[in-house]
Length: 267
Image 1 (cartoon, rainbow, N blue to C red):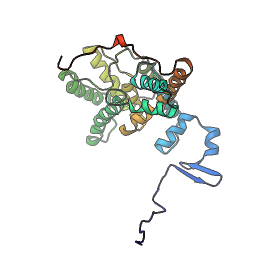
Image 2: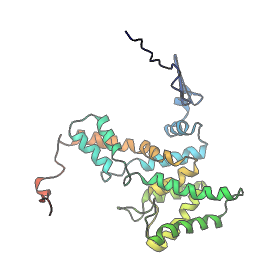
Image 3: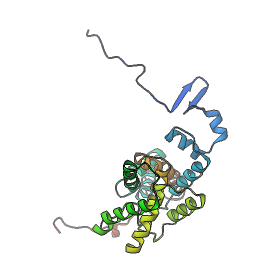
Image 4: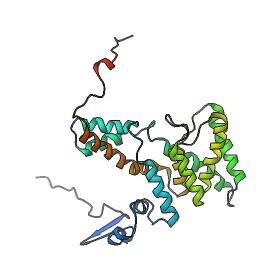
C-alpha cells in the first residue's frame, strides 16, 4: 500500500484579527469582554477593518456612514431578490446570499470606483508635493475630473440618482461633516466637483459619492468600499426578508401572465 505523504501544516492559518484561547477572546489586542461593555457596534467594525479603534470624531462619522447605507426601500435589485428568494420558502441565509449576489457593476458598484477616483487624484498631489494640499489644488483636480468625464459626456461615479434629484442621505452626510469639521481632501474634492457638475448638469452627489469621500478621509482603501456598504445594508435586507415571510403569501406572484409579452424569435 502506497504511503500517504500528504501533510497539513499546523501553522497554515495566520491572522492578526482575533486570538481565541480557553475562556478568552482577544480582538486586535483588546479583550472582547471589555469591547462588549465599552464600544459601539460601529466602533467594533472600524476596529476589525482598520486594526485600531477610531477616535471620537472618526467613530461618530463612521457610524453615520453605516446608518446611511441601511435601507432604500424595495427599489434596489438586492432587496427585490431577497424577497423573491424568501417567497420561495428558502431560509434567511439563502435570501441574504441572493441579495448579496445582486450587487454588481450597476448596483453598489459605484462606491469603490468613486473611492478609487478620489484617491488616485489626491494621491497624485502627494506624489508631487509634500506640503499640505490647498483649496486651489483641490479645485484643479475637480476641473480635471470634469474635463475627463462631463466634457466627454461620461457619467461620473458617485453622482446622480434614478429616484432623487437631491439624495437626502448624501445631502445630510455632507451637512454633518461640515458641522463636525471633518473635511479632509477627499471630501473637499467631492464638494468642489459637485459644484462644477451641478452648474452643467444639475446633478448632485449621491450616497455612494458622499460616502466614498468620507471613507477615503477615514483612511479606508477602495477595496473595502463594497464590504462596508454590505455591512451597512444587511440589516435592511434582513428586515425585508422578515417582512416578506410574515406578511406575504409564500410563492406569491411578482407578476401576472398578462404582464408578460411573448415574442417570436427574430421579431
